[in-house]
Image (cartoon, rainbow, N blue to C red; front, side):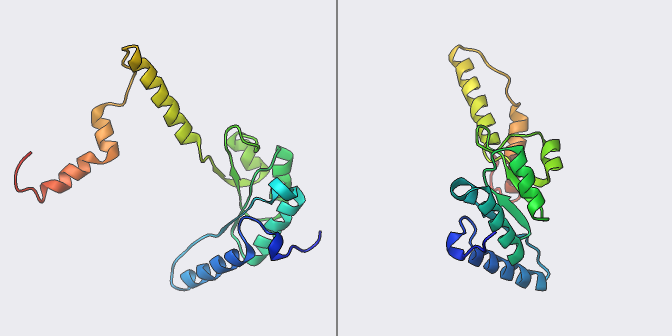
Length: 170
């Protein structure tokens, strides 16, 4: 494969990765810790080979975790993970081009991290739509108890803390 110049790298540029690696080393010298995740979107416009070459370059520079965006099959995912012996992150967007494989399969392929950037939002939106439709027809769907909601939001902690400074009772 032909060496990649900085002008061909998309996503995380080599300069940014080098800067992050330098900052990581400064932090470690002072007792801190940080991991560098390097992303490339090269698969979209330049193909899988170019994306893997970017990942190899990022590993050479000092990245700790590699994120090759948008592999289109489990075979491509295996090729990515086997090409560079670093931890890899899969980005699973339901309905996107990367296969939404079960956790065990992702692990078998070689991924140690999986991000699901839209899953919680999609589930929350579906629950809201379901609730609103039910309320429109005068149903009252199952909801979280108010006491649990208050606790999860942090109201109880807020009220307990504010008691220390209260000059009058509510």
